[in-house]
Image (cartoon, rainbow, N blue to C red; front, top):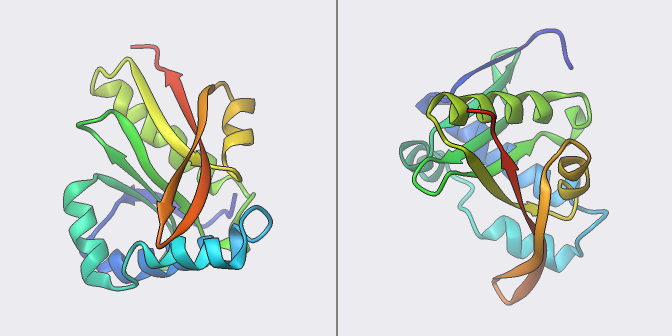
Amino acid sequence: MIARTRFREALPRDAADQAEVFHHAVMEGASSHYTLAQREAWAAALPRTAEAWMARQVLYPTLIAECDGHCVGFCERDTALSCVETLYVWPSVARQGIGARLLALTLEAFRLAGVPRIGIEASLILAPSLEASGWVRESQNWVERHGQRLDRVRLHYALDT
């Protein structure tokens, strides 16, 4: 993990960076598992604007990985459904432990809230590493975005409450 990375709750000023992290994580980071048409449809599913991501911060408590004053990764949690809504990391710092730390902090937040089990609809990129760290596969499914089918994996994780 990058030594100067800190983790905290998202602030409205992080929203523009979140939009860029999401866009680049999908367009670059997912290129080995999804076609260009699929990635374009996926990226178009959420506006690339600060306003859209500020609105999401209200809906989903969000943890941010910050490096040199910029968001380089984030994890949203849906407290009503007890699931991880999103987990994205800037491609150039992917595979350095930032996503794992965001996820661990998110799991701890759910644990502290007394949630016994959480779920996630993971991309084909994320699912193998989750399964390797104790998540249990329930099924493989897909979602349609702008006419494109995006395969994903439904997993759950039991928390020690």
